[in-house]
Image (tube, rainbow, N blue to C red):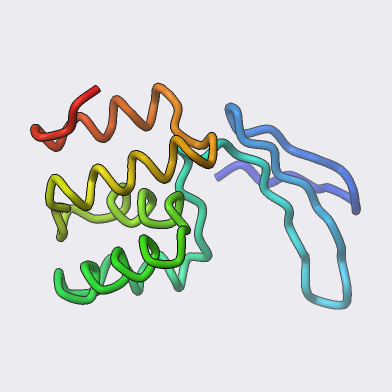
Length: 120
């Protein structure tokens, strides 16, 4: 494990991801993460909750994200777990939503092609 020391407002680059120490208050550190929409970034406890969820729970979360226009979050659910495969209609809604918000990029398109019914 690489351990680095940083002061407030100092940054670290991890590939294309920029990590900034926004604030240090007592024993708590606030981090800012600048990453493209194709990157999945979650608190570990939330990530583990997703990993341990049933396919029905994943489906429900996916639908909630679609209905609230949080398409990047819906995409991230698919990236984290293979427990749910969206229907062609759901995938079309996701792709259209990502495009409308200017979030759909080549890396995301490539990933979404794993669903054989996705058109480029």
